[in-house]
Length: 116
Image 1 (cartoon, helix red, strand yellow):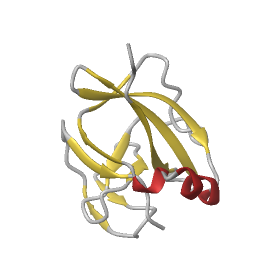
Image 2 (image 1 turned 60 degrees about the horizontal axis):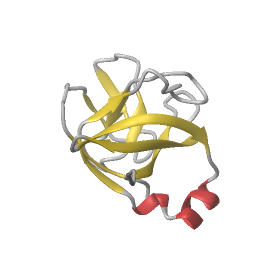
Image 3 (image 1 turned 180 degrees about the vertical axis):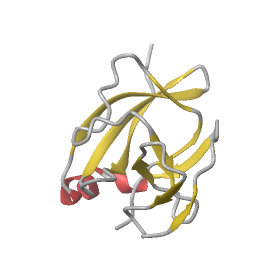
């Protein structure tokens, strides 16, 4: 059986470091399975900045979280639709575009991988 998997990009909220988040399709949704540090140049060469994911982004027990801060939680910026680490704060600031907003819970996501 062929597994459908992709890598989407995220930024660590504390350090702004870039990391790849491996996601795998499972029953029509996506699960986060692995995370790893990555350089912007490598992410561009691999095309990770063009990956778009829609649906749930569940987490597996094996998912290690952000390789820099360890957070397994994330928020998606309402403006640029990119992923950032999340620590439960009520107002978040995107490490990609600098936009700040109230944080709201969601079950389904529409995220884009990068675009520097």
